[in-house]
Image (tube, rainbow, N blue to C red):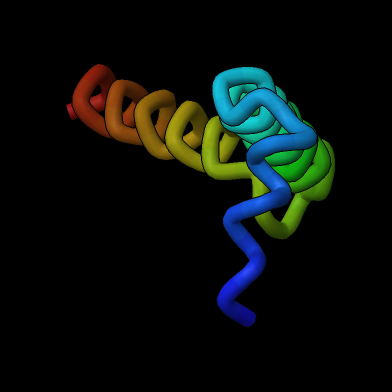
Length: 61
């Protein structure tokens, strides 16, 4: 356990952290796109439908 610091002698910490950040960003973007493609979790179309419904109700009154 006390020799884990030696991993940073093999790998450059800056490259590891940049690669980890890029990976996590791409993973988050992929998860969001998958959720937006499903009708149950698409929060953008629901908000648009609510806005159109509110405009329609306001326009008919």
